[in-house]
Amino acid sequence: MCAPKTGHSHSHAAHATQPPQHHGTIAHARTTRRDFLRVLMGGTLAGASVMELAFHRAAWARAAAGSADAKLFDLHQAADGVFFAQARVQAMINCNAAIFVRSKDVVVVDAHSKPSAAAALLAQIKREITTKPVRYVVNTHFHWDHTLGNPAYANAGGPVDFVATAATKQLMTDLAEKRLKESVDAIPAEMEKLRKRAEQSGSAEEKAWCADQIRQLQAYVAEMKNYRLELPTITFDQSHVLADPAFDLHLEFHGNAHTAGDLFVLCPQQRALATGDASHCWLPNIGDGYPRAWPGTIDAIKKADFKYVLGGHGPMQPDRTVMTSQRNYIEELTERVEAAKQAGQTLAEMQKRITVASLKSMQSNGYAEFVSRTSGEGNPHWGALPPLQNDVSENVEQVLTNLDKA
Image (tube, rainbow, N blue to C red; front, side, top):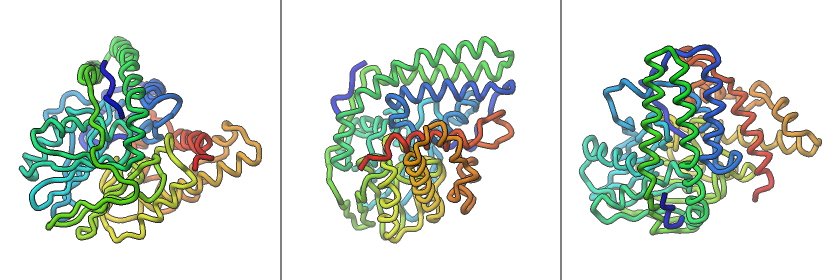
């Protein structure tokens, strides 16, 4: 495999079904999937979000085979010229994308986990929205599932610039090669687990599902064999404006959050905000995060005038409720972990005491129920899924690891 020249939540599928399972099979699948994602993100939870793990647990338990609809995204219109591409389940996760159709061209926010996914979205944009060319691709942060699709736009035949913060470009430069290699190296073992699972199953439906997962993983390995990452061509530290007669796009950095370089894309005229993974509909990814700074970053962007929140994973939001709930959860969890650390508690003790029921932020505005639903918890057709507490415990570990990051 060729490494990138230099230079990572997740998606929600509305029409997937699960192959028949014996009780406990899904829990085992989650364990192996978690191990795989830890490698994929680089080390023990480095860059792996709780919700990537939780969502992949659900996605891994659902059938990808048997569907005649091969679309990777569901397109929703937020406002005039503003669209939201919600990613469907794939073995190798894709992020959502925000699509801004301007007077003569298009701006796409985030580029998925592989060029073929970005190419699929580009084709879908041309079929369902506009034939105007994509002129700018914004990378909200450095993670693989938001950046590895860049080459599809570079190879589309027209001029295109990739826009990110300078910090994001540096993180891509420093980490993309290592994390991509580890992801590819981990796949053969994952495919072997799927083969054994198929051999042990008496269900033709589950066997077909396993075969489709293996097919997707094989395709990913083949696609990334000679991969070359496209780095940002336009970078900035604090703000950058993409002006146009249709509407303006304000790209803004408000502080460390999900990573050291998260940017927000604000369209003031249409009151739409693309947030990447700094705010979305699952529990936050704190593997590369800044738990002390993150709530303040959300406070800063909340001063802007916007209605629609176009997050990196899960459904589009028509207001700020989920954004506020996530912000409060990060703040409360950080305070609890910090107090526990000062009291001399071990990680295991923290994970036992910091529970979903004990977190006020989880109970406020139905946040726990919402996160469970959007990440796949509680669906009776998916079998014996581990409780949301497992994911909160993952967040506790991430916060403890990153507590002192400035």
